[in-house]
Each structure stands twice: as C-alpha cells, then as structure tokens.
Image: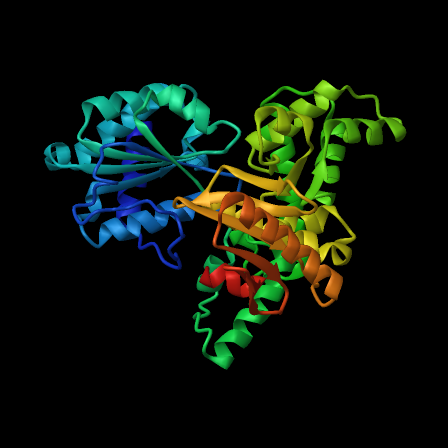
Length: 435
C-alpha cells in the first residue's frame, strides 16, 4: 500500500473508532468552549517518563473535543504504528495531502492534529513548524523524554509551544481509574480508599499496571527501567559503561528521599572496586533527571549554600523503588516522603528542603504564592518523634512568616497550635485527595 493510501486508511479508521475506557488526567490543559487551547494558537507538547500515560492524556483531550466539534476535524497519528515504518520527513507532508484529499472542505476550518511519539521521524520539528505557520490547525505532540526534553522543544519550536509534564498516576487519579468515589464522610468510601492506598504504595502509579497482580506489575516495571536505561540514557548519550549506569540507578532508587552527594557516591563506589570519576557520576545523575527517572532537591538558601550542601533524591514512581530495592518494608517512611514530593512537583519545579535551626524540614516551596512547609513522618507515635517534627516546622514557620504547615503521617490526624500558627497533622492518604 502506498504511503498516502495508508495514511488515508489510518485517518478514516481513527474517525470511525470510539475511544473508550479513558479517564480525565489531572493535567491543566484547558480547552475553551470553542476548542482553543488556552485561547492561544500554541503547539501543545506532552513530555514525561516512558509509560506515564501521555497517549491517554491525548485521548482524553480528543474525547473532550469530539463533544464540541466534528470528529473529522480531529486526527490522531501514532508514529510507533508498525505500518508506518520506515517513515521519513517527506512522508509527513504526504499525511497532510492525504487528510485534505479526504476532507477538502476542512481546508478553511480549524483542524486538530495529534502526533504521538513524533520523535520517531527525524527532523520532525521542521514539519511541525511549517504546518503551524501555513495551515489553520492546532497541534499536539508527545514523545519520549529522551528526545523531547523541554529545553530542546523550546529551541526546536522557537517559542511556538506550551509544554506540559505527564507523570504516572497520582493517588487521586488512581482512585478515579478504579472508579472509587471520594467521600471522606462515608465509612465505606474511606475503607475503599485506604485499601486502594495500600496497593498504590506497593505498585506505584504507572497506568499499565493498574489492574496487574504484583508479579506482573514487577515485571512490567523492570521492562520500563530497561527502556529508560537503554533508550533514554544509554543510546541517547552514547555511553560505554552500561554496568555503571545500572548500578547507579539501583543505588539511587535504593536511597530515595535521602541526602546524597557526589563525593559520598564516589567513595561508596570506590570502596566496592568500581573505577569511576566524580564527573561521570555527576553526568549520569543529570541524564537520569533528563529522562524524568529521578529528581534532585537542593537546600533552601543561596547558590553557595546549594553547592556546598548535599541534595535529596526522589524517584518518578515509587513502584520502581520496590522493584530495585528488596528492603522495601524497612523504608516505608521514605516511600511516603517520595509520594509527597511527587504531588508537590506537579505544582512546582522549585522545591527545597530547609535547614536553618536545629531541625530539618523535608519540603519548602511556593504554590499559588503561598508558602508550603511539610514534614513527613510515617510513625509519629513516640513523643520524641512528634516533638522533633513540630519543632522543625515551628522554626521554619517563624523563618518564612508562614501561618501554617503540615506534618504528614500514616494515621494520626489533629491540629496543633504553636503561638498564633497552626500545624496540621494529616494522614498521607487523606492529604493526597483533599489538600
């Protein structure tokens, strides 16, 4: 079949296909009543770790548009479709020709093109820029984070794009996907929520493992890790030391929610007989951040403070830690802290840990112009543990002039008044769905 005829078949098949079993992701891509994105003609790009749900985020947008406009005005192409291999830049123009030959009357109307995994076409950005400038269209693209880094998108598309990050499912999205309604005043609802939470902290939020058993979900996540290692890091950066990369990823996920420093990692590796330079470790950590596998958090302070002090490290999904680290049961507190980080990271990229007085505070950031201060302590039953966490938050509230802060726990829920300030002690499962 010739390329143009194949594109026509794919286009028509999509228009005849009903997209089902798709739920709304909590990604703030606004579609106005007229279907415009943010009322701006911008290319929308979705980036994130592999298998985080970028395709289904597109499907959700498509379903929202289909309610308002003619289905034929919306076209979706997945460039991982084996029927399109091999595909090159000239073939993309053939797609445009195929579409308008099918629907010539749409030439004067706004059409919506959804291009999934477009990085499979070399020099794809030239095509996107051209049709953005020449056609009456809205454009949506997704791609692997290995080839669609936010900085590279901004450079390639030269100010024409709005970029959104897609993470694995939050707990609130996880509940929605399992059709569990949130009603904290209902005993039945709370029971279902708590049961789902016990599964969520074991399996994580990758959409594909939503209904998989533990053995299958572990195997799926292992495959994801291998894809990240080989496709998003090893091949992209043309590395030579696969063993070191695997070892470093395992090391990082085994130590999530912990302070780390390049010097400490270097000395740990050296003591185990691994020949590696500090620069190499630094570069590999940066590559993992670029692939959205890991995130690092600096101390709050000056640039000199951030350079001088170690960072904290967090993973993109706690399911990966369970697969990479056999001592999961001993690190439930670290799992809780990582989950809190991921919720904050969806709202802000500028997140810090705070240490000024006697105690550390796990998280400080600003969201909507408001200071957010959070400590995480899974087991706060001991008097010393509770006083330690409260003392740290109290010091931080005084420093920032904040009126409130949060202490995230496993079950305890109450309010503590410190002078004229309030500390809310909240179970993690509840904080994830209410705050």
